[in-house]
Length: 246
Image (tube, rainbow, N blue to C red; front, side, top):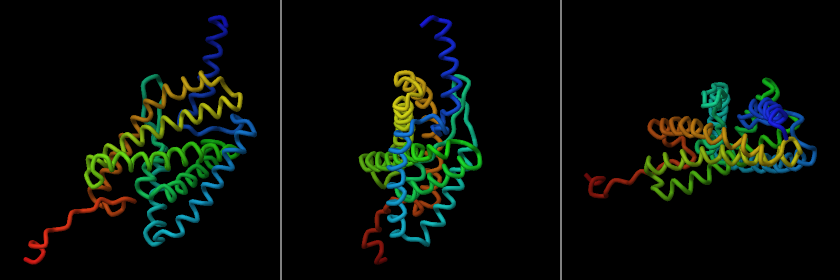
């Protein structure tokens, strides 16, 4: 490929991929087989999540789901600049998982994706299954369970353990979701895999840093003022029996 043709290709790739750096795949970017597979996984995930959430405390879970959905939706509207002339915004999957658990968190993220696609054309409706898979399954489930493992390793009831787990898990979930998106685009024949991985990973490594900072700030605030609202709240050490008797 000549330098001129290569520059045209890179320019076209820039226009095609860079507006989608928030991982919201638009309509027409995925092939029918890839869309159907991701839709099948997403439907199974949503159906299971609905069933699991029914068994949880409705008086606390449902109102918190509404508040969390509103916060994530509003936060995703705020872009933060990153080097290179583009910007990123909060994904929110790990945050939803930490606050609500993986099942309720996935439902919240799905509702946010539907509203964004239907009202703001931020991601396509026909590829909603892929967006739920990437940002719901990977972002929420993957982020939550990685956070839980890391938090347990450093002290489940300590702020240090929570903060380390949240920071690493939220950054990792964004990076892995970008890899999944690149693979789906490549399988669909939209762009070569090497090019898609380079473009997506190069930016989402940076976007993940912003994700980690915002998620840590939000979680730390809840940890300080209302730790009981966390899906896995810290357990405070009971007072010694001698002090209780006094």
